[in-house]
Amino acid sequence: MTSPSIHGRDGSNDTLPTNHVTDELLAAYAAGNLSEAQSLLVATHSALCPECRAAIAEFEAVGASFLEEIAPESMRAGSLDSVLARLDQEEMPANNVVQHPSSYSAPDRQIGEVLLPQPLRGYVGSDLRDVTWRPVIRGLEEAELKVSGPEFNVRLIKVAAGAAMPQHSHQGEELTLVLTGAYQDGSGRFARGDVQIADGDVDHQPTAEPDEACVCLIITDAPIKLTGRLGRLLNPFIRY
Amino acid sequence: MKLIQVDPRLVHPSVMHTLVENSVKTAITRPVALFGSVRSLAAFAIIASDGAMTQEPTAKETRPSEPLTAPELVTFVSKIAEQRCKTSFQALFGYFAPRLKAYLMRLGSDADQAEELVQEAMIMVWRKAASFDASQAAVSTWIFTIARNKRIDAIRREKRPEIDLEDPALVPQSESLADDIIEEQQDARRLKAAISRLSSEQATLIKMAYFGDKAHGAIAEETGLPLGTVKSRLRLALGHLRKELKEGAP
Image 1 (cartoon, chains in turn brown, red):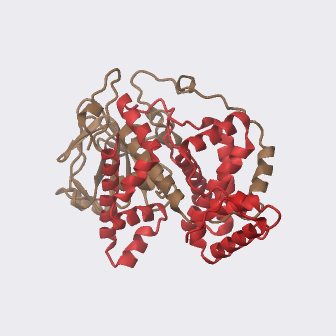
Image 2 (spheres, rainbow over the protein chains, first blue to last red; image 1 turned 90 degrees about the horizontal axis):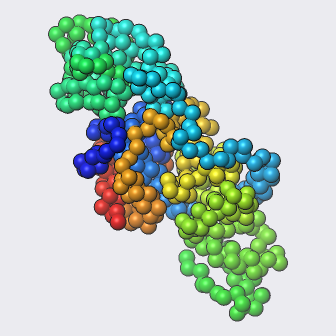
Image 3 (cartoon, each protein chain N blue to C red; image 1 turned 180 degrees about the vertical axis):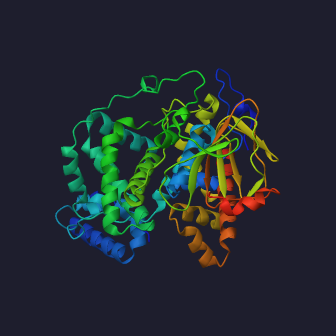
């Protein structure tokens, strides 16, 4: 999908994600037709992924191009005049100074701290250490995020360094975005910015890499299904 | 419908009146055709300013209906930013407001709500003109996103997670990629060419994706195809479009 040359950069140790969100999600985000939960994941991934930001910009341009060919609806008589009258009441914008990235009031960054992308900071604050975690099973903690709309469950999970999740499959669709650390499952390796999309066809046992805890943003539209020998017995108790 | 282009200087005023009236009548009976011919109508309207057009009060606001060129649009926005230029604002309003209204109505807003959202969006254009960055997006794309965001804020009343280009956590793109993207966005013709190279089914599917949440279901019903098939065809169509955009890159 991406040519390696795009990834070969110098001067920065930011790594670029290799596992992306789908074109449907990017287009729906650009069109404004995505749920808040999915928008949160798409925007957070895209903050970490220039390729998907570019794709969103393209899809926004596609939307704008449809405006050109749409049959216009006349505005009401007097509409322009009333807007012009409202402009007169507008004060000169107080903040019309171009803000340079260097003047941006970024939270102070401390050693070892991972800065969360802006879309997510609106939900959890700027620092993962401030999150109140709830233990789930050994090696796994989670924190639910308040996102409108009943159709998705949105949460952060923290998998302890080296810990393996129970073997499981999915009843609906699960989108996982890695924020810190990395995990592996049978299908590959997922690190900061990577997105894994899993459904009923994916039966996996994600395992965090040994050197660092792995924190992910997860949105699901149905509970997972434990498929391991012991796990199966626990299925009735799983919230999602 | 094809309007006969007449140089107004060569035509007697009474003949011009008849021409204008006929065009208006034709346009009213065939609203679709109006779209393509508003600019010529408006040209007549300016000449025949002694009352011939007063039955058509909205004509003034829908005047510049042919696509304005990208540099024209950028000039309007920078004049708004630098001089608070109302003439430029009127030009943008005249072109975009009726289109945004149609777009919002296609997405399910009624006429009143669409009208209100468009007014809000255009006021935002006025307010935010100084933050428009021509190196990031075309004016039409910028205005499209403003209207899109207004709609989400007003109708869905939920948070709208947004990518912040000043975000210190943002992973930047390599410079060569950045250059490509800017060129891509500014080349509207290339975009149109890419869309035109899609099959009509694919183009329709993509348009539907922009024009409503219920589109997938509606297409499924219309075509008798299962929802999953509609979704996978849309996926192919979007992938195809991105490929076309990449291949058409200069």
